Image (cartoon, one colour):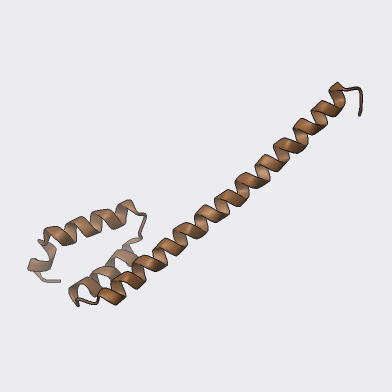
Length: 87
């Protein structure tokens, strides 16, 4: 990349924002190629793909939390049964 691209404050801001968003170096580099080529549709596609990856992780985490909550519920119900003279 040219020195002008490397000293672009907007580019630096974009890179920091993408790092904060958890983007990999590969994703950032692919984005910057689109940025340099003024390929806005390509930029948006890359960001949309990364957003979907993050959303999938959120959903996976929510499912895991739901499983833990159900296990806690089962244990608490078992404790109530024991305390009331059951098994």
